[in-house]
Length: 401
Image (cartoon, rainbow, N blue to C red; front, side, top):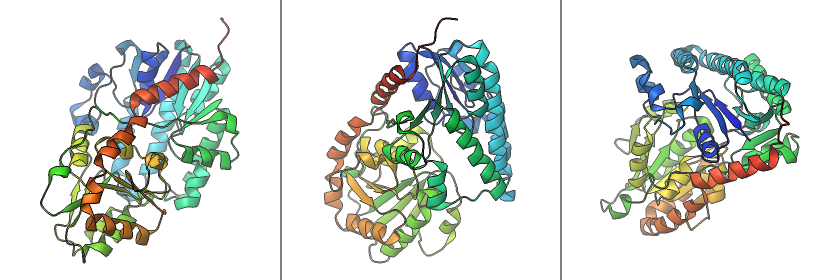
């Protein structure tokens, strides 16, 4: 069996490609982000900073293709953010990538293609004509669940167009790959047949993410860490509200924010916090590992997070986690042993648990060894094994032409 992986960015698509390559099942890896060191060297100087957090992937050069127009369009879309044009440009970038991948299908010997949502429609139509199995990479909750949980900031017409594309992709997909049972359940609730929707938990690099740092700190501070875009979907506004509730009575509390600026970042402009909150922009994986090692507790109070990659990375770093019930990676959390789960959208419950952590730092830090052990269930080798076993089971063999 030979499987092609396409993605307009990266997310975890490179891990799928690595899994297939190691199993001698990879037909190709086509992406909007340079994958190999050779491709990275061809990035124009003006765009190198944008790709600096993407390390080269050990994909055979002859199997890797890069479509640089996608990130170029997305970069232009970023400039339109203030005028509301970024979402339209991002959709355009995904659609152009999709058409490019669809046009190349005839030139690759593949039994199946894995394509990411919003960039799979043309690819799946072409694959169906060629007798290639279609597998949808669905990294988010079903769009109906997203709308119910937090709505959208996209213009109504654009939002309807995006959901139509997603529905058509789901209909054309032979299989749908979600990243958690939470995400899978939202597809079942939307009426997608259970037999074609699968949950594959993602992983963490246990060699990069290792314990250390905060356990030896003795400065009296208790550091909460938020890693991700500062957006409402990830509950960043809830986190700031909860932190403000406890900061007055608990001077030891600190908050570090690591990640790109998002739609809730303006709440950081409110004064009165002094140096209690430190903000850092997007970082690469090694810098993220250092941040996790230096904190006392990861906080991810998302209203909707189909997985939350930083959760297994934090656990692998020996860091207890405080997540909402709408974080898919809650599957890894055993309350009271390696972290806590609070109701989504409940700033009071979040503040109460954060206050308990600050008042009981020794109990929190005593969890570190158990955190590391719990991450063993969410490694990339485990994900590689689950993915290849699933594909062997669900992708039919093509008859010889």
